[in-house]
Length: 327
Image (cartoon, rainbow, N blue to C red; front, side, top):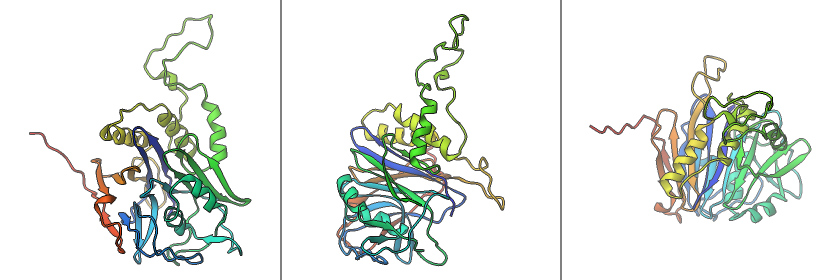
């Protein structure tokens, strides 16, 4: 799986977290609720027989949720995004919590209720090079973790585990996060305001269109460009506090960098596209999503499920376009 994705966090009255999954095909992922007593079995660290409940998008294999992104009942959220060529997983290390990539989201969300607990847990984590199975090797990933107060990025690279504060609330793919932030300075003159003549006072130049203050923002679908565009959109977004206004704005932020089929060509006549977009109200535990073929927002409320259960609860995605006819 080689996916190019964008994750975002956003706050109005409530806090929201979600992502675009950009991929050439679907793995038949489902909105998956993991209740508190579902037994999480891990390869090296101690199993979690009881833990915080969580909801997110997962590919369920052998009754194990391989989460792409998830939020727990405390409002802590996490997403894994493709990080090829830079992700570097170490061998099993004595004295550390050796956690595989596919275990990292449940390991953290199962135990942590806020970012302070996340930082404490990360001090002991070694992300080790373990495949889920022969057919599902470890994906090169980095992660964004957020609560309603702050966001961080976690990257396992050749010189160790890096943890970055994330003031823009956005993550894409390459390059590493510190370079993404450094490159933002190239766009410091870009503005959401009307363009002004800074070329020269010796000539009379006037704006001939709305939006010219944003000239120079990238419009291609590379990960570095999506980072800039999504960060600009998020940081300049204006939204009301209602649930409808908030989730609509969140999906518009993700929509600024969504991928249309045909614009990113791969081998074997495949095309990368935004398979799904998600938006979780982390305060209420409601997971909203759209798919490539279905732009209507669907939702699953984790608190309407039995969160003390032991079995995964999976909702297949509504893939076909839902059209509301008015006559």
